[in-house]
Amino acid sequence: MPYTIMIEGIDEAKKAVSSIPEDIKKYSDEILNRITDEAVITMEENAPDFTGTLKESIGSIHINPNETIVGPLGAGENLLYPPSHYAYAVEHGKGPHRLPNPTDIALRLGIDIEEAFAFAKWLQRTGKAVRQTNAFVMRTYQIMLRKIVEIINNSINRFRNL
Image (cartoon, rainbow, N blue to C red; front, side):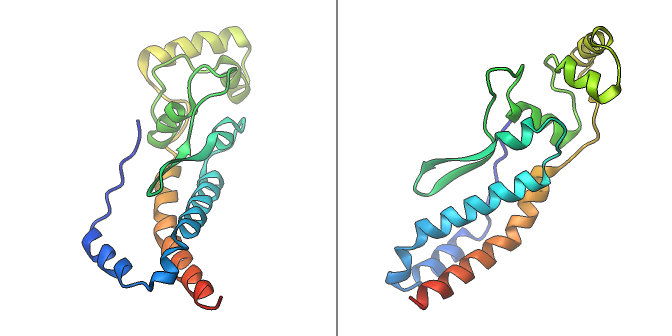
């Protein structure tokens, strides 16, 4: 399930952006790319790491010049469910409602694969989670709120010195 982040005060932001000198506006793509790169790095640093699948799935997709999606983007062919679905379960401490990876469960709990498969079936039925809530997406959002202002200010100062 994707997150939607609404920015309040967008009119004030538009007014502030319109007052930026025209020569700096041409660098907006570079600023947005820096923000996107920093968001990916920050989310990777905050994501839990057991097998690395979730961290490795984090990236960005540019939808249009003004919109980029950052987060877990999908599954490799050897995965039973997409990391984006898994990421939601990790974020909220819920089970995936799909069959969890029995090998992952066996490694986490130190049990044999047959027991892990039976446990995975129970988890799928009940929607329980093996993990604690890990709000890595929300942490990334909170960290990026501070970093975005810093990135924009640093970029504008750099562009002014060109």
